[in-house]
Image 1 (cartoon, rainbow, N blue to C red):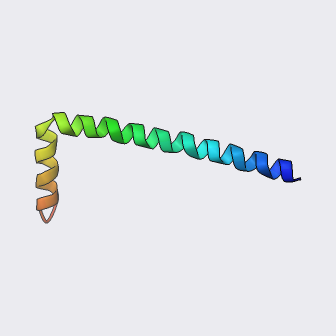
Image 2: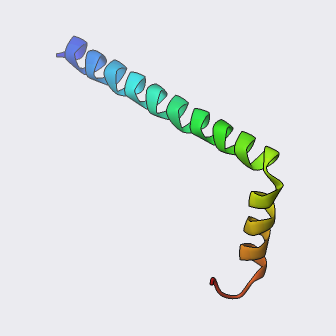
Image 3: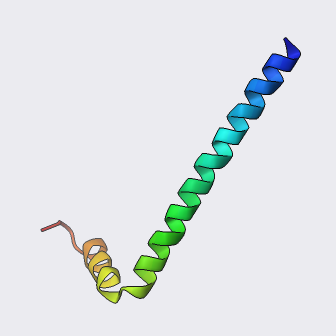
Length: 54
């Protein structure tokens, strides 16, 4: 039973690691997109500065 619980925990941790890596990689790609595209940065700034969206 202890070995089964350990295996389940290990599998869960591996899945969590994979999911975390996916999220971090996506964030990195988004950062690169936003960093190199001033139009996106300005659009986002305008959205944050406005009281409503159009």
